[in-house]
Image (cartoon, rainbow, N blue to C red; front, side, top):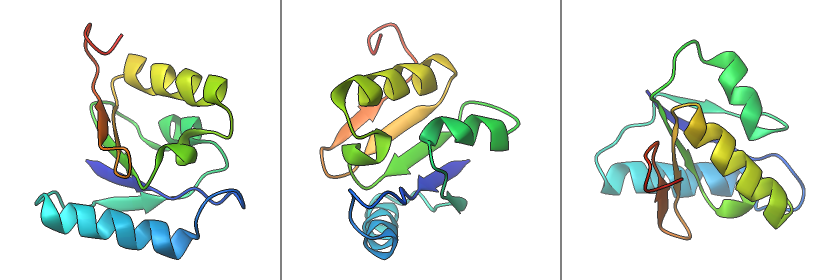
Length: 101
């Protein structure tokens, strides 16, 4: 499943802008978004998804937290739990692998 995560914090760009960026990425890369989710914390997605091995696409790395330590923790947590994270603005992809760790 491909999930578009929309960060609703006031420190990020608008949800509409995030959705547009993610949809454009999905069109350009032939990876249709199955669902868009908005949670106060990206780690809450794990509670809404019954299985792992999904890809979560975010517009920018700021969607993962408001401090570097939180961003790092969220990346580690999601990848450790089997999710792949894609940050569009930074052109980064974090996959569950020893290389990512």
